[in-house]
Structures are given as structure tokens and as C-alpha cells.
Length: 374
Ligand SMILES: *Cc1c(COP(=O)(O)O)cnc(C)c1O
Image 1 (tube, rainbow, N blue to C red):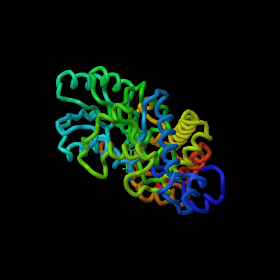
Image 2: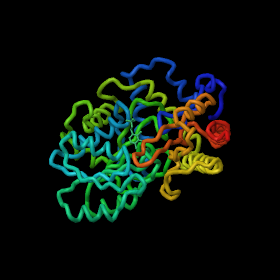
Image 3: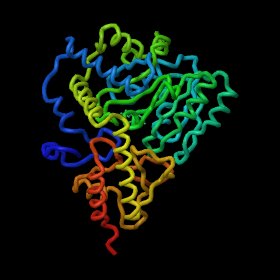
Image 4: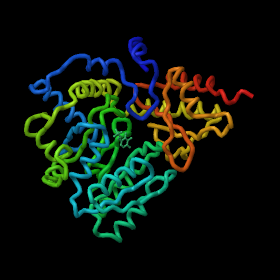
């Protein structure tokens, strides 16, 4: 973590998790006062955020951002239920929990789905998608998670985008845990709808998500939503027509903190600089953990710099919960595993976390290996 001692007083530990994650004092400070939401000042901040998000998402003109209350899943559900008509059909490329969640949301909405499951240890397969799209002309939409936070896997955004574009389908990407920490140009990658949230790589606090799309795509979804509060078109229309006004109560403090987080991202040098830091964090982490005998779950070439899964040690005295508590006591919170095929834990390398923090973390791990006493 950077900077102030005050942040250390407020934060007894550093979050090495995939979000909510450690944020700076500067971001948190924005939430110390009450802000009104009904005047121009506030709406201007919202408009500025929307513009900045568009600029981070593509260099092409014609794109627009919609902010949506709730955690990231609310924005995914809003997108699926506002973009895909009842008679549409969705292919979901699955290799973890968040891909499965997209399928679950679609099923709940009565949308037919085809799941292409590559298993948790393999990335999404463009050829398998090509085959499905060739054989089933009913399919209208394709959805994929960019960084599958379940394992830390980075899916091939470009290759899947090319196949989707070739078959003229709508491409929906859950870039929740990668946007802001990985360079993405949604126009170049043929992404029609990109979903992310405030509390991941932009390093804000939880409370809202956002959806990026071009104006033509947004105009085309009018009237399709099966929900009032999650109606993406109505939310967008309201923000467009009233220059930044939210339809219902907005998370004012979170929005102010997010505006500051965007300034901070810019000050760091933008997405390229942040991507570089996260990558350095991750390399430092893996080098240190390998030295201590821990084994990463994924092949290095599939691994993102966002979060890394490690196999739990197979020592009879090892217990994850004890390991977790010992590390927390030393100032670091790690993340349990979510992989169904393997016994793992995860370590996030995003947020206000720097390579020097990872060095300290490795030292903490080294002195926490209580099971290796013999
Ligand atoms: C964090 C995350 C989400 C959203 O999770 P919430 O708990 O609803 O914020 C969705 N997809 C991915 C890939 C994520 O990492």
C-alpha cells in the first residue's frame, strides 16, 4: 500500500482478494461527508465518470456508459435481461463460477442457452464456438467472462470476438475483474456489451457496476428488459436525457470515491501503468511462492495478473483456515479457493497493492508455514 500511516491505522490488513480490495486513503476520504444528488454538481460528476469510462474502453467514437446500482452481478443480470430478447438464444463459454452464473441468470429469465464448458483448467475454445455457431442458427448472442476470477484464467477475448463477429452475433463480455487493469479496446475486439464494476481494477469501493456499449446497440434494446430496476435501456435513457441523473437513489458516496479513483488511475499513468504494476505484483508473488514450495494451479500462459490460484499443501498438519488466520494476524487477507476440481486457495494482486507489499507478504508466508516444523 502506498502513502499514509492513516491508511494503516484504518486498515489492520491488506486485502489480497479480487474485490472488494484495498483502496487508498484518498479514495476513502471522499466518503466522509454527505453529498447531495439532485443538483448539477453531482450530475456533472456522473457525466464525467461516464466519459472517462468510455475513454478507457475504446479509442473509437460512438460508445456510451451506463452506471447501475448494486454489485457487479446486478449489472450482468441487467445486461442479460435487457439485451437478449425472450426468443433469443445464448452461448455461454464457461470455465468457472462466473461463467456458470451467466448461464444461471439466463435460465432464470427463460432464455435458451448452450453452454460450452472447457473445464476450469482450459481457456475458452474459439473453434468449439465456431462449430456451435455454424450448427445452430437460432443462436443470437455469445457471452464470456474475460478474467475468470474462479481460477485467475484469462480467456481469449480477441479470438472469441472474431468468431462471434464472423457469425454476426452479439458479444457480451463480463470484464468485471480485468477492466481497468488490462488493456481492452472493445471496438477492436468486437465487444458489443462490456460489464464491470466500481470495486475491481479501477480501485473504487463497492456499490455500483457499469455497462459499456455503442449508441446503436443501446438504442436497439429499447423495451426488451424483463425487470424495472435492472432495465439497462431505461437507466441509460435517464442518464442521457437528464445529463447524468440516476433513475433511483444512487450510491452517492461510492460515486464520489469512484471519481477520485479514476483521477488516481490517470495519475498512475492509466491502464498501461496499472497493468504493469499488477503484472509485477503477480510475478513477484509466483516467484516467492514457488521458492516456498507452493504450486500454481494454472499454466503460466493462461494466468492473468489479477488473481492466482495455488494448490493447498498436502501436508497432514496443514489446514487452510489456520493458515488464513495466521496471515490475517500478520496483516494480509488471502482468499479461499472456489475451484471444484482442485483443492486451492487464491491470492489477488489488484488494488492498492505494490510489489513491495508482495515482498512483505512472501516474508509473512515464510514465517506462517507452521505445518513445516519438522
Ligand atoms: C467480481 C466478479 C463479478 C461480480 O461479483 P459481485 O460479487 O456481484 O460483485 C462477476 N464476474 C466476475 C468475473 C467477477 O470477478
